[in-house]
View 1 (cartoon, rainbow, N blue to C red):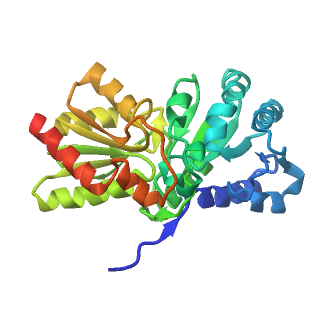
View 2: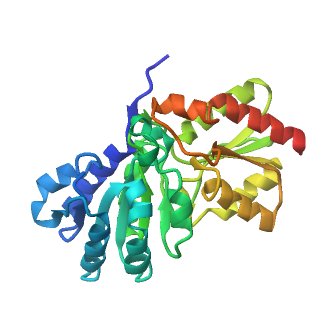
Length: 314
């Protein structure tokens, strides 16, 4: 079996920033003393006149980003997801989202998969927080290819965009010619027995679960919900009608994230049984990334068992 290529989505984010910098002479990047960690360091080196390090001052960083955006610039402000979504939430809400400004938030080290940094730096609530703030587009790419596509698309998309990035290397799923559009989910395979909807690092595990289910004669539809807001309600409802039951997988608290968003859609439009796979409303801990996902109920086995349980409930 060929070795699976693995690349961190934060690395792809950094590559996209460089490409954008070449295309747009006004595009500006701001960091809070962690350009190396969020992969924007190469932009700083290539375009020092429009790259700023504000120090360990995330609230100040987003205030500066908002001010720069009022001059017509597209601004990418990068930090860890825990700091963007919590420490600087007020600045993002009041200065950026309320003003509908073109600030793009590169939020790295998202989810339990952050690993050894431990619970304080594992953003497990960020999607729920950002979903509660009006006007913010939320992207959660599943691999390096889609992360680069998401970053390039965010630069052209009006208003604030939150890009959820992963610290550690994860399997590359897509080819470079992937068609990508904000707000349009990607259906990777179709089946009539169960709908599997995943985002971020959990997409690869969901595809593995679909393979195991197929060996049991269970045909699954697999959807990459790379845009959590605006959620592709049309695709969600199509899958719900086709399969009659859904499993939603994300590296996030089961409350407030993609699982909650999907439940809101089907509850209002086409109620079906739904299982949410994610962190079960607890904090994480330090450990190897993939082992942590297994330990906290997000293994391939957990996905298969959840799918079988939903099928029995239909």
